[in-house]
Length: 362
Image 1 (cartoon, helix red, strand yellow):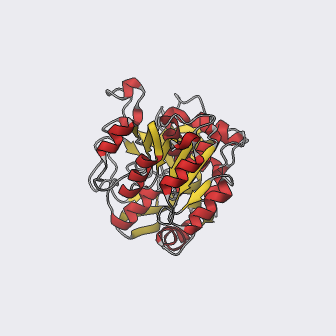
Image 2 (image 1 turned 90 degrees about the vertical axis):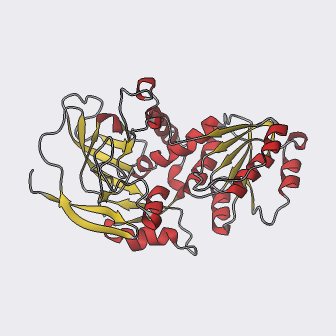
Image 3 (image 1 turned 30 degrees about the horizontal axis):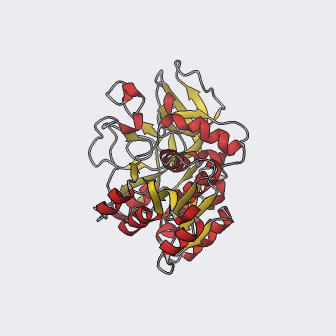
């Protein structure tokens, strides 16, 4: 209804996030669109980067594809309930519980025709470069952004499917399988989910490299049999030699920090013809030992986002209990507390939070 207001968390610029009343979606719903009621929404590392140093990916001028611009309603990791659907939408109905796949891109460009929607040069994202986001009381998204979830998946778990997709895609690209030996370097939110995903994939020897003692403790809680260490205080070469078959190194190393030292540790950790997967995003060039890469004949896989078709698979893994993504959630907060208890808490070096969710019904 025109003139109706709703509460939303909006990003304006660096260190400027406001909780305010804004116009709710109004007018006729498009034939391929869905009106949703967001339930639970995660604060992502991308959101943190925008808060600390943005705007980076939030568009200061209208986005080339979506037309969105600042201020931006935040939130791209979220669950929701469907309120209304356009006449062409048949896979969900009012009342359906859904997880949002937030990537928005043309269906008919080079990548779209090949089903590689996450690689489109025009890609936008709900909560970052779209008129709506998960930290608003209402949102409008495309039908293809909405995936129904079974009753075995909670609202919190449904909100965690998006970051879990990033993690599982990295594990897929590393071809981790039953019996694999794996190094997970870095246990931030994505690294923690990568750790859970390697376990779900059947890895039997799992090493975890992490500087932060709180995160090392969490890693042991998530996967008690993991070999967790601080790389600054460990003879890593001896460690990998003593815990892998014939001392050759791990099959797969997943770099989840986006740091040069972490990337180089991964290259040293893998056996000859092993695989290094770049999951963390590097914000500056990294110096590497290319000769080592050549001598070991390794494969290096780089990842960006995820194939959007991965959603139902993750929901089934969660529902079956083999991918307990909710275990990395350390707090749920109200929208009004999003700055102090959310963003500021996550950037506090003394804090022990891993994943903070905004409960839109709090």
